[in-house]
Amino acid sequence: MSRSALVGNVTAMLEDAGFVVSDRCAIRPKSFDVAARRGDNLLLVKILGNIDAFNEETGHEMRRLGTYLQATPLVIGLRSRDEDLKPDVTYFRHGVPVLSPDTAYNLFIEDVPPLIYAAPGGLYVNIDGDLLADEREDRELSLGQLASQLGVSRRTVSKYEDGMNASVEIAMALEDLFDASLTSPVDVLEGADDVHESESTPEDPDADPTDERVVAVFTRAGYRVHPTVRSPFKAVSEDEDDSGVVLTGHSKFTEAAEKRARIMSSIGQVTRSQSVYVVDRAKRDSVDGTALVEREELEELRDADDLRAVIRERAEHEEAA
Figure (cartoon, rainbow, N blue to C red):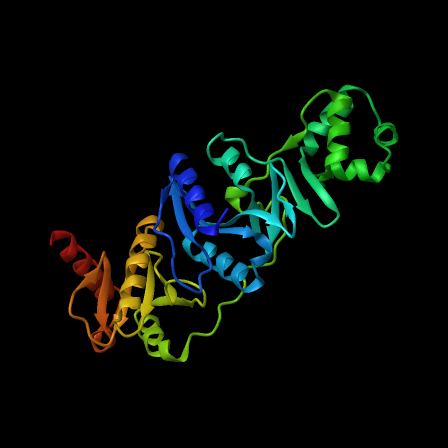
């Protein structure tokens, strides 16, 4: 299957699951392919035939964007090396959860989350430690007796009851022994933090030197500016009073810039963000809801209220037209 066809299939699946999906980020470089929202659940989705192409730089950017946009970064892919990804298993690459299309279908269409996750050493599951302790005590088994039946140490059983996850083989043995489900699913939409201890959000990259003046204006206006390196926009700017997020682009207004502005608008609609593109000269107010602001005009704006007013007025002007 071509990557274009795979992207189309995944996008259609998300739409069938009730997600509103942005236009595809058909530009390079790009950290994600589409943004998708269903209610309060926002996804930034990278779609790959081979997930080995997902590098650390892209993973770090997706995790940063997930933090600033309150979204779950997610990779949907077919295989790793020469092996297909296993169904109903959550993998991880550079701190980002990875699912096969079938696993994503089960999660988003069938509402059946994956129970298994891959980690160094094999496949694991979440054990409900409180439930395990209750089942063991109901059967009047000591820690040592249960350990003996499982072929592990008494200390290991104690750790299971304290919340340590177990291999798939141990989980199956426990469920056979107690004739009860003792596992809990991987919460992919919450970043799978219950099974994957990733490091804190990677630090922002340095702003491109050509963008430093724009960054300075946004900072002066009261925004926390987070530069990007692999996105359709140059930065994500958070209003310091937490009243909103602005996706920011900056370049000469060329055909490529117009394309970026359209993609930014589509992503902004899904992520509930505003978008603005700073240009040297503008012959129109906006592009599909992305406000166009000339550099000199931007530098005259003094605070966040002025900037928000310009963005809002130009987006509304286009809607009215």
